[in-house]
Image (tube, rainbow, N blue to C red):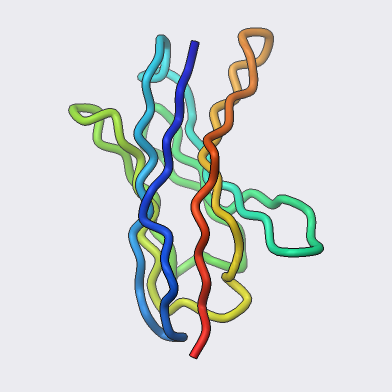
Length: 116
């Protein structure tokens, strides 16, 4: 069983920064990629960033150069550092772990609102 708990969402002005955290618990997480998704009102959920067990990150083109994903194995936390935020970054951000036949796990989400 995997549990994911996101935190760090907030209201921020354009150009501002936020750091989201995903506290992950469960087995096999140390060898499993962890993902950040987001869903804006009226839009489909989209992959924002992913980090493999080898710590190789991957990013959506819309956030590349502004967002940084990282993981701290000692704390079982995955971070999403978001800089130079834009209004179009407004969404609910979700942490996700996909383990194939073992399950597809999601957190409850954390709201990020970018507005002046």
